[in-house]
Length: 90
Image 1 (cartoon, rainbow, N blue to C red):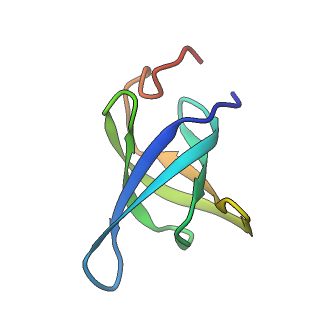
Image 2: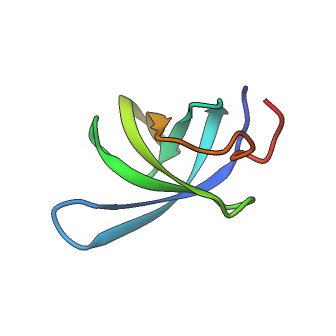
């Protein structure tokens, strides 16, 4: 479902814990198309938090798209989450 949901991501790369504010373009029960100002690599694991519901889930980048003016397009799979993680009816 096309839906712009504000989210945050947290991950540790080759240094300290990093944090970015992002948003989604598309959401599903299994993941989302994330727009991130930070470039993450495929298979990168991170913590995704829905700003509206304040729920968090472990996630992994399964697809890395191109950088657009508003950020990197990233296909994200959620590890396991509640059905109402996005706060909308899917």
